[in-house]
Length: 173
Image (cartoon, rainbow, N blue to C red; front, side, top):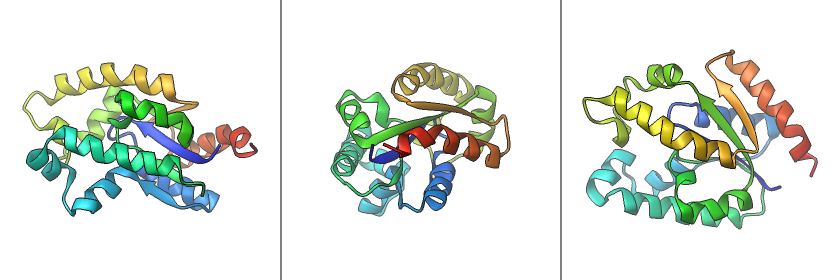
C-alpha cells in the first residue's frame, strides 16, 4: 500500500478530510483538482468552458498516472469524476488504499447549494441533476472503495477517528 486515496461526490469533504489525515499521519497532501487547475492557472469551471471536459479529464488522468508511480506515501484527494473513467480505474488500486466518503443527498445538497465553482451544477434544475449524478456515481465509488464512511452524520472529529481506525490494518502493510 502506498497512498491513501480519498474518493466521493463533490461536497463530501474529500479535501478537508484529506488535509486532516495528512496532518495526522505526517505525510504530504495532494488534491488532484488543485494540481490540475494550478497547471493552467485557471479554475475548474474556466477549464471546462474554454477547453471542455475531455481535456480536463485527460489532465486528471496524467496526474494520477504520475502519482501511481510516486513511491513516497501521500494522502490524495481525487476529483469526483476520476473513478468514473475506465482509463483511470486501472490506476485506482495502484495508487493505494481507497477511502470512499459517502454522503446522503440531503447532506450533499446542503453543502453544494451555493457552489458556483462546480461546472456540473450550473443549470436551473440542480436538484434533479444532483440526484441523477449521485445515482450514477455511488455504485462506482462503492465498487472501488476499500473503506467506506458516511459524512454528515457525526462531527468531523468522529469521522476522522473512524477513518483512521479503519486505515490501521492498511498502514501496517
